[in-house]
Length: 304
Image (cartoon, rainbow, N blue to C red; front, side, top):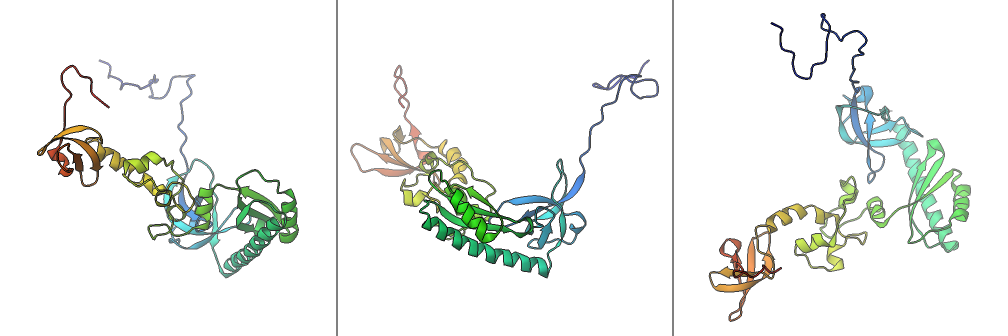
C-alpha cells in the first residue's frame, strides 16, 4: 500500500527529488542585518541604516557617521535590531569623533550665515517667499534652502546670488506649512513640543468632522496648530469617540427618561451622559443607561 502524499506536495522521483526535467523552485532568503534608526536632524525623518560591526557598541543618542553623500553625521534614534533587509541600506562608518563634530558645528555656522543672507537677498529682490532653514552638505558641495510660498516663484536670480555666496550647488525646496512647522519646531497649546517635531513620522489626514465628533468648539484658535491647519492630535482619540458614541443616542432624538419623554440636546461621550430637553420642565442630565430611544409609532417611518 502506497504511503499517502501530503497535500500540495509536487511530483517526486524514487529518491525523493523532483522528476527529471523539472527545475525546483528556490525561495530567495533575504540577508539579515543589524538595522539601526538614525536621524540626521532633530526634527527630520529616521533612516534605516546597516550598523555592521558597530551594532553591539551603539546606544540611543550616539553620534555616528553615515556612508552616504558627504559622510553625514547623525544621531542614533532607534536601537540596533536584526532584521531582513530587502534593499541595500546606508552603512555606518564609525562613531563620530571630535573632528566629525567640529565639521558638523562648522556646517551649522555656515548654515546660519547662509540663512540670514538668503532672507536679505529675498527681501532685496522683493520675492514673496519665507526662507526658514538651510542645510549645508560640506562633503558633497551642496546646500539645500527650504522655503514656504503661497504661489510659484521665479527664484533663478536668487539661486545665483546664493551660489556665489556659499560656493556650493544650491537646491531650493518648497514645502507646505505643516512641513515648515515640523522643521522649525515650537510649543503647542498643550505646553509640550509639537508632535510632528518629536515623534510623528508622517502626517495623517485630519478633518473638521473629527473635531465635531469630540464636541470641540469649532474655533480656529482652539482646533488649529502652529501651522494654521487642524491639530494632528485630533486623530489620536477619534476611534475611541466614534466607538463610544455608538452606545449613546444622537442629538435630536426623542427618548424616554425617568422624568418622561424628551429630546436629546447634548451628549457627553466620555462620561456617557445625555442632556435631555423637556417641553414642560428645565433640561436635565441623565446617565446613558437611564435613557432609551423612543420607538416611532407603528406605520410611521423612523425620523433622521
